[in-house]
Image (cartoon, rainbow, N blue to C red; front, top):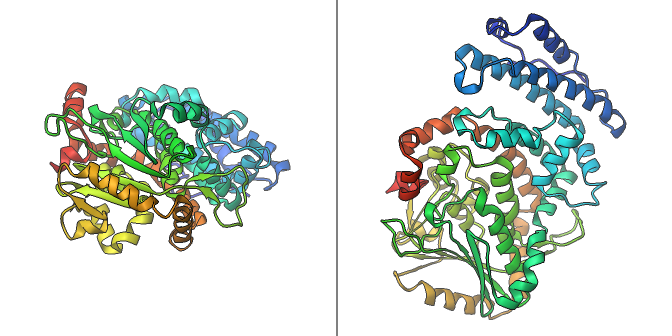
Length: 492
């Protein structure tokens, strides 16, 4: 199987030569590209084709290093870099279409091991050089402004898109990400004894038969970033694993922002301060978040057996969200996984995906079930905001309470939802999902999401949106911390 030339893989006539790249190296690169052959689709042909891919990617990297760093490139050099990267990405895509399942099978020892996404991608980098960026390459870009990154994490998105596109491998990865984290299992005895665990930006406590998870990234108005993803997943695991807990409660902590000082804020979405400064990772944030704790809110914890053709068998409990102030972006996405949402009358919900330039998690999959296609498009494309106290707000929350009434409302709801026992609640959640969102449908969505979100994350439009709607380039880090971020700065 040869790579079929496309507009994205045929170098624009003269572009590569015009930036001073050595003619002999260019000729060698083009020859490797045109002669790149997939010899089969079996484990036997994998090693030979992987070696050819690694050779082609090394050739691409060698040419890229001869160009100036991205911030110093002129228009021609920028175009040349994209031609080179695009050629390598096309080769990786063709390779993965043939070998995604054998690669996954090799890393997981024939599906015997559940390997989390964060570990899978670096295991692939180690065993198949050139297929995805190595850890040191990702670390080197970690401290670079988002606009100045090469976008190597796009190759991670391509990798996961192909893995998730294969039914068996994709479902196995989804299952692996629904397994309890090792850290939660380690902390469970301590949590059961003390009824409280401080995880830094997240706290989890047991109050009676309820497990309370509180997001406390308070200097960023309880926005989400790389620092919150794993603590949130550990907290959710502890609630689900503790047999004394029958229901989960998700809430935002008290912030000290001048406008909201002393008040709880539910969730301000993605941390745009970190996004602008290049500190939001593709796998560690986007994939780990939506395949991890967000999906665990919705589906619970998977067991040790992988049985893809049987009905879902998960350890799950009902969840309540208590929305004070607002649920923006990722906060609004989370509400779509909850069994009941209680909101203050003054609270609002929004998904400012267009202004952020990214896909709002799994909201595109789930939002239409609650509010219909037309209003969902309004939310995603036109930043339509819903006030909790409005008629439209009833589509996103179940109960509206006055300021100061939230604690009593939570207590009433916990009592009501657990009165029939946690077993029937879990059974009914599973029964609702059979038609609403089968796990294979979620897998297919995440296959598309992995690829498209990776490109969005490095799109020039994302930086342009940040500059236009958030004025990031003209605000100091201290100002960004003091003033908050995400939709708040563009909504209020």
